[in-house]
Length: 300
Image (cartoon, rainbow, N blue to C red; front, side, top):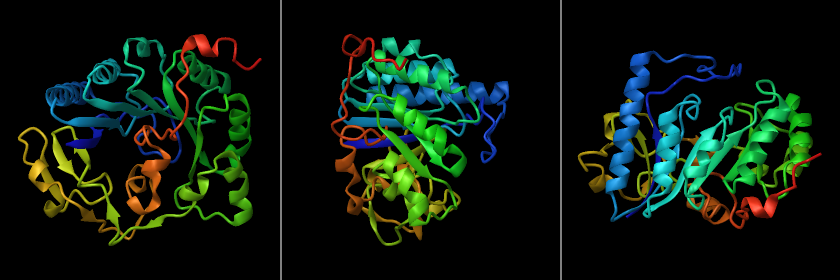
């Protein structure tokens, strides 16, 4: 079996204070953190035991996970497993990057989001170069709101050309052609994000070769199809009941407006666009540069 897993445990705390996010500056209780750590360690142990399958993992925490040591250890451990394709995580890149030296850099990948009003520009850019100097695969992105355009242009100018800068359409925002043009100049794939994709009755790999898993091991087709409907539950990871439920499915939702969802719609062809980096949002053909090849390339 070739299976991609989007994992989201109990963790819901974040060190940033983004105005649009309900988890901004939220603190998890010690009990929640212990439960999250135990759930993650159980998940990693399960993946390690599935040696007959080919598995890729994307951690999509509600908050920021790389501030927690157990997520850093999980990514290093998963990346070193022969049957793991991608071991990736969504992160604001607020944490130090030295932990990546223990990972298999052919598998580890980071999906990094820049929040201009939350972090000094030089610090974020410096972390990007730390990753690149260390040979870590990563993509960088920003939300396409007008107040972020100047920062996005600066970031695109300072990042090496081989680092993909993606732009997410702001939730609920409609872009005129004139408004979309500067974002498309920064990210040629912005037109894919610009409009929600009609999805009801359309084919999707979710529920067939892509699944969403929570901290209890409960399996659903994706993060977006209702988890309150018992008919949408596919089973549990740890008792193996999910396996019999995996099959081609049509999307029940009117539309899909998130990359981690619509990237798995075959009609869009995005698995080819991001081949090798589907979960980490890294386009096919993006080079993997080791430190010896990139020395001295930092902006002055």
